[in-house]
Structures are given as structure tokens and as C-alpha cells.
Amino acid sequence: MNVDNVPSLTVADLQKQVDDWIHTYGVRYFGELTNMCCLTEEVGELARIIARKYGEQSSKDTDLAYKLEDEMADVLWVLVCLANQTGVNLTEAFRRNLEKKTKRDCERHKNNEKLK
Image (cartoon, rainbow, N blue to C red; front, side, top):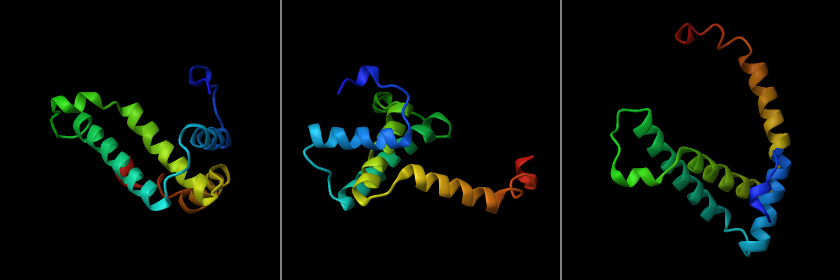
């Protein structure tokens, strides 16, 4: 798998590429519980960067090794692993979720005085 020439991907492509990688290099998926713990860990690493870059926390020298885009990609990776191993089609799930949010929130945010 040549990762240098990865074109723009659809969500379905992303799910397939992760699955192909797992079966080529990763032997098998970690169990769902392990992957859920990994997802939580990755979200925590992302939160640390956000808190230090955009929040009030000061950075430590060890924080320099973490990159925002890398941590976001790690979160996405594990989320896709969980979707693959539980049979979730993320394209369809996202479409339904966007439809739900649009119906529910089509006026809500426009009328929120806190956002003006």
C-alpha cells in the first residue's frame, strides 16, 4: 500500500483502506473494547493539544511531539476501525445523522442569541 499517493478519499474508501491495512499489516482488529479504550486515549491526546494551544493550559516540552493533525487522524483511524468491526457503514450513518440534525436544528442555531 503506497501511502504517498493516497488520493482524496470517500468515507467508504477510508473504511476499505483501513480494513485492507489491518488485514495486511495489523493481523486482525483489536477487540471492540480495546479499540474503544484506544479511541478514548486518542481523544485525550487531542484534547491535550487543544487545551494547550487554544485553552489556558501552558505547554510542556513533551507536548511538542504531538501534532494536532496527527491526533485527529489517530481518532479517525480508531473510529473507522470500530465502524468496520461492528459493521457500521459510516457514509450511510453520517448521511442519516446530517438529515436528523438538519430537521432538528434547522432554525435552532440561527435563533440562538449566544451565537450572534
